[in-house]
Image 1: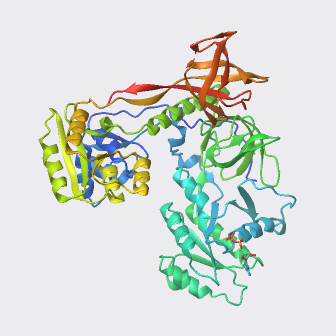
Image 2 (image 1 turned 60 degrees about the vertical axis):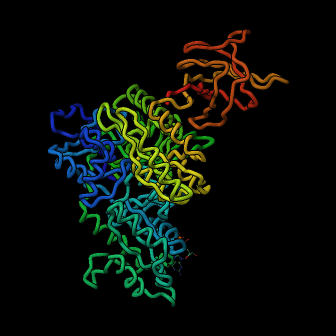
Length: 603
Ligand code: GDP
């Protein structure tokens, strides 16, 4: 365990001041897409894409661009790029803490072990964990919590206890970066294999330095030189050959060289000068989480900055927690957890997701409100993302008045393709431009989907049909494909679309939520639930989702909606009602009903 933090005063992580945005300033936000940048610059996205192409960067409008690229483009337009100062506590996971050097103290490195299957990752993690006894620490029964810490002659190292790169890349996909050093395990009798290569790519993408552990050197067939030679093709060149990658020959099974590996981790960590500020309210990442019959929801928190204490009010993802207990993998109880320490906590009100960021807030009330706000925002975002794109979404606004629609034509023959193109170009609707960005013969392919995705285009298939896999990828990317056999129908549809006159489209609108407070089982009828409308309203014709700890357990319709003994059409927020769900009886106290209606949207 790291030194106790005596200073009781921990600062909050939410900045109070908002940056001032003047003229010719673009505010940079993490994960900014090309479209976001174009909007911030008030320039057509196609123009920004052209500028990017000019700079040698191929990016479509939904692609995230890094800060440097944003700055380049902004400067080209005569704008200055400024970092956003996030003062909205509900976006705490985006806050980047910039601590004053004087408040920083060294923190242990966080190490992930990666490599090809069967090369010895699990064996190495076990050997290191068991070496704690030899290193003079208490033994005893351990539990898997997703991370453990060792003390190597006074130097602490935290190991992430989920070997393999799947967990690593999933975390990264969720925006979490928790690893300081990657130990790449390569079996000396097997050499570089596909997952070795993938592990290198992941580590490099995350800008994590790599230490190579050449494993299984106890085997007669071991050939460590071959491993070095193969890895040199990936720019991992041993120091002995003039490179700067540390290679340690080990036998994870026998323990040979493991001490040497730990020392090299220490050396590299010291060079990296890893630091954190213990005098902050803690923030970090959820390594693992689950539900235990006795303990309830639990999660392993890796503290990345600040100090976590029992009793702290935390938000992780959209879950609220008042930390009840903290313990490490040896069941040792903690009152405080410091930077780079991983502890399993209880006291959560639901199960968060691995990769969720967490942050401590100064009051329980504040943390609860933030968790709630994040829930609402996530729900709104999900609904937004689930919406299919309609033609309106496909219009690219050039300025306030003028719009353009990009179209890809795929037809069965050159003649029909050209005829369609010619006729479409004749459609004249004020303030709308039609751009035919591709017009070719053949079925709709993945390449068409990619082009449509990159340029926000509509695909018209004339006497052609996409293959099921292409259809699926279009659906996944929400690309609209319209198939026709008569030119006249194409022209009518597109003209109608341009004039905003397509057939009505319906979309789901959430109207309210009700919480189940009691349940009654009535023979022949099934389960009747007494509930309380906590938000909005519920109608008797509503489509419902039954949520249990945020997870959808059933989707369907209500069978009855009653107030006292009467069937009613609608129940509003603040009122109690009795419901039964059509064809579903497994309703439990604490479940939440999300009610929605189908609403017509204008095309
Ligand atoms: P993982 O898939 O990378 O986690 O690999 P494991 O740790 O499960 O190891 C795969 C197999 O290799 C097991 O049978 C281990 O006992 C064996 N193994 C791991 N390390 C060594 C080693 O240093 N020497 C020898 N001879 N066998 C090893």
